[in-house]
Amino acid sequence: MTMTAASVGPQRYQERYPARPEAATQARRDIALALETWGLPHLSFAAEQIVTELVANAVEHTDAATVGASITRTGEGSARIVVTDTSRTRPTPVVPPADAEHGRGLLLVDALADDWGSELVHGGKRMWAELRTDAKP
Image 1 (cartoon, rainbow, N blue to C red):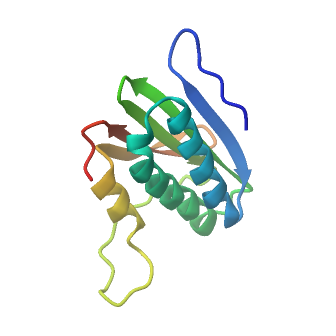
Image 2: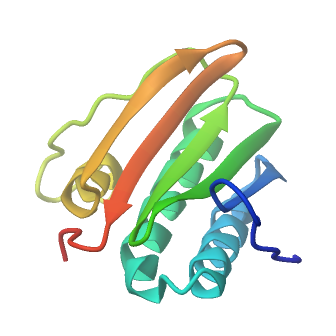
């Protein structure tokens, strides 16, 4: 992956991944590298957890052939993560039973992001999460 800073406008990195379990790991590494390149390593922990959850959800819960992931630097200390897939079903957070091994991904996103949500778009949906310097730990 090659990173170049935009001379004008926001810095942005985006990629499409085959919808396989390893896509979450690849997206996580790419997003972390973008943040490091932009001098925002303090956002990496939250960003890595969020992109991992959103990509894993898209792989596991949709029949998409590919999943898109992007990160855009939106300010001096802020960034926006976007994950796209071809499903038109918007996820909803649930509180799973205490002994459940799965089902907490969106609760984690909610805990780590300053804001997050989903939008239906042409051809599927977009999940997004905002991170700022004062992001929740």
